[in-house]
Length: 506
Image (cartoon, rainbow, N blue to C red; front, side, top):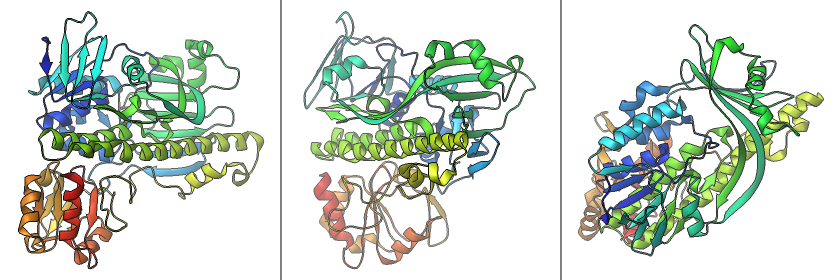
């Protein structure tokens, strides 16, 4: 039960999977959190069905991964094929340097139910259903929400909107979205196989000359099929049961499966001009829509959460100046636009291959230049890149600032250290030597006030020879989201770079 005039550290509007993960990270950092359901349910919302190793890593760091493993599936591989099963590109799903598979899939409802139960059992998270927002106020210090009959008012210094369907908040904020120039209508069908039936455990994009298609294994028995609508096709016709049976007939007959969910959805690219207004923040689909070809929607939302919450935590605990929060939009907006651009390029690649097959045109002549760059890896990867704007080393440009450090390191005795457990969402300095001898006493004192961790005698960044080599020349200064703030060198001392960090944050 929610009482009137309750105060929290953070209010999260939207109890979808992303909102749940955001709440659990806040809870992990001992932030008093209110998680409320959105104003209404948009039945045409496409729910994510996959995440990557970085998301798995964060889920483990907040103590959740082991609790949800039974509802997670690991595909054998991802591939891009033609209708004749000719492989255009195939990648096995293997463990990365973060110790998790590169791709994991799940049934949306099953995972959300588990996560919501975990949130409800957390001591510092309150979960409220059907809180219909009728009034919102905000300034630079507080946010206030009232429910439909204005009998309940809640407040917090920070408000996070995590759902695309919270139109009330977006209208109040006057959020403007940029159309990034791509729209395709797709039919989405989730099915469950009947006993004894089987399909490949893969994440597959099919360049059909008639209709681009994909299917994803969500579990041993559940799959998501997606079919692109052709010119002139109507949504209501495509959503008929007979049409679905016809489209899936290349794989299964109707008696082999049950239809669990059916809708049409626009694959499009759009992005809010700003992810922040006063102390209200947009994350995930509240801020942008990414075409799902590269499965980056949930992953990008998790990056938003990881970027935002450590800054709020420092501000709330009076360890950092308030204006570090402005870096959230600076760091994430540009990154999201790059991710959308890359996903659109992959969609254009799929379309181009399909058209080429239909017209019997050589693929190298049919693929659009931007799609060709995506196909051959000339564009920036969908993950995090170095030299991002924001709270990073400002004294000199290096090739490491902005990279996320791998999960495991080794000390001089070859003992493996899990840095997520050792650092725990704090700043850290990693060195082969005695860090204290490289820093002035005043700098050490100020870093300790930030709860900075000092990891000495580290000789190897496991599975990352480049950063292991860095340790022979200098030290690595790490942010709470495990991104590298900067690295020291002969030209830039650890003392100088730590003072730069303190100047930007405190």
